[in-house]
Amino acid sequence: MDRRQFLGSLSLGGLGLMSLPNAWAEDSNTTPVLFPVPTDTGIGGRVVVVGGGMSGAAVAKYLRLWGGTGVNVTLVEASPSYTSNIMSNTVLTGQRTLASLNYTYATLSSHYGVNRVTAKVSGIDRAQKLVTLEGGGTIGYDRLVLAPGLDFDLLPGMTSLAEYETLVPHAWKAGPQTQLLRNQLVAMPAGQNVVLTIPKAPYRCPPGPYERVCVIADWLKRNKAGSRIIVLDANADIIVEKENFSHAFTTLYAGVVDYRPGSTVTQVNSAQRWVTYNQVINGNPVVTNGQIQAAVLNPIPPQRAPQLLKDAGLLSADSSKPFAPVDVRTYQSAADPLIHVIGDASLTTQPKAGHIGNQQGKTCADAVLRLLSGRPMNTQVVTNSACYTPITATTATWLSAMYQYDPATRTMVILPQHNNGKAIAAAEATSDNYQDMQRWFTTLMGETFS
Ligand SMILES: Cc1cc2nc3c(=O)[nH]c(=O)nc-3n(C[C@H](O)[C@H](O)[C@H](O)COP(=O)(O)OP(=O)(O)OC[C@H]3O[C@@H](n4cnc5c(N)ncnc54)[C@H](O)[C@@H]3O)c2cc1C
Image 1 (cartoon, rainbow, N blue to C red):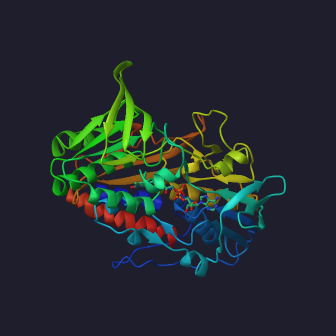
Image 2: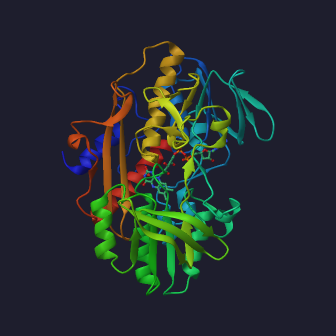
């Protein structure tokens, strides 16, 4: 099996649900083929899904496709449409527009019969089994699936989240901040520096910050002679695909990328765009209160599950892991078996990534339908993660892993037969991988939203 066949098998068969129809198939024109929602499964119940991103859209779709018309699914999403984070780094370089990353809920509603409510959920009443909407009103549930993504924290010295929106965009949720960061890069004088900061893991999309460093460095080389990108990484080292990223930083982008591991931000001045930091390597202080002036400052903040989950008592008691513990066979919350938490908000051993969010949505849909119909749970859950990373404007690498439920640790572990239990990375960045990346992205988004 070659790499392309292998990745294809991951995206269609990795979940172990091959006996069930897949809702999306590709013909040579990549036109989605929509399978009908069955009418005779005998399963019934009211499921409310909060958040229509990568995991929430997937669970809503598959609850109807596998559960049939007797399963009443209501998707409550704050925005009228979804903007993909995946590929949003290429908006920064002008290769894509934000509009090209926009996905609507039209097919979920019209074809799959998912009820859509455009509103923000402001509270969860676990005793009454209902959610409260910000503008007023409540919706009752038999089972609740929470897929709201993440909230972002302030960095030291910042006083308001508005600073991210107007002065120092993190752009770690694609939207207006992505456009602002792009505009700031374009307006920056040549020869001046970009500063990007990376929080301690776990954060959304492990390779994402390093990918952003590469595509910005590539763009600076071609558009802003003499400019550099200085990277303050709170982690002790590059946390994924180390060989590919270090190779890019030290060869392709030698003199452009200045990577500083073990660097914790101690102060951000958003108005004047400077940061101070401490750098510690192998336990030894290397820089104390170092200050860097940026022309463009892109601080990627520490992240946590949204306040909604904290208020509902669903988060881990360990404040260093501010996410929702779940049973990864069903994504039931450890605090409430009628609530399921999927995607970035959940606490699992899998990466916080859109491809995994899609997989968790399917696993959760299958589990909810089993629970609604009194069938035994699936104890052999398998998920897969595939992630492509642009390294230049024309080349990319990839990383993939298959996970299986491990009863001993009650976690998802990389299959022992999958590269001896380790993720597999591309040998190098190539243009062939770049083409595969476009196809993978189209397939993943089509599979999630149509
Ligand atoms: C720059 C960047 C690049 C990335 N690249 C990749 C990649 O190559 N591959 C990959 O697999 N992943 C990638 N990711 C990660 C991926 O985007 C996330 O992991 C994924 O989107 C998480 O899915 P989710 O469903 O948990 O949350 P989201 O997709 O963020 O969706 C959450 C939704 O919930 C809604 N919501 C939140 N709160 C409420 C509420 N109270 N009421 C109603 N609605 C609410 C939000 O509006 C949002 O639409 C990348 C991320 C970034 C930032």
